[in-house]
Amino acid sequence: MYKWILLFLLIPSVAFGAVNEKYSYKDLMDIDLSKINASEFNNSTIVGSNFYQQESPDKDIFPNGLTGVIFEKCNLDNVKIKDGMVLGLGNSNRQIKIQNDLEDWKVEKVLGSWKAKEPLNKANFIELGISIDAKDIPAIKQDKSATEIKYEEVSIISIDK
Image: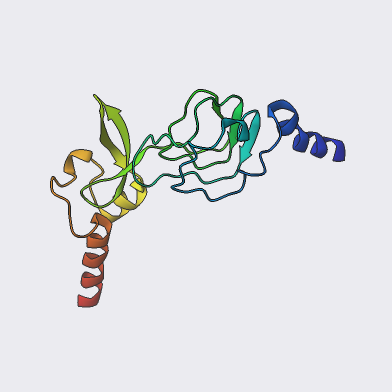
């Protein structure tokens, strides 16, 4: 039994390169790493780090010239995946953008621009009775988010009862 556990623990470093201690298990949200030498990443596995980029989808935050960089259990939302990067198990690489309803929506690139596809918290939208159709996103930026407005409506109804 112990030899199987040991083998399981060693497989990532033997098969995919050593765990990159410098960039594993870190919160690197909104940090641009593109000016760092690619050799700090090459032929290694990065585990459990958050690289989420809030401002825009498909952001290029890693240096050019990467080779053999494997990501495991990382948040790579809004990060551009380029040559030399491999997504292993348990990663997230959604493209997300805040829309005029002040909510996060999954987006996809259509004819060069990012178009809303579905709300990031789709289940919450459905539960609150908010449309999940992107065509119902307001044309003008709102002062409050769609969910905030709905929660306020629910609170007012509860107080009135």
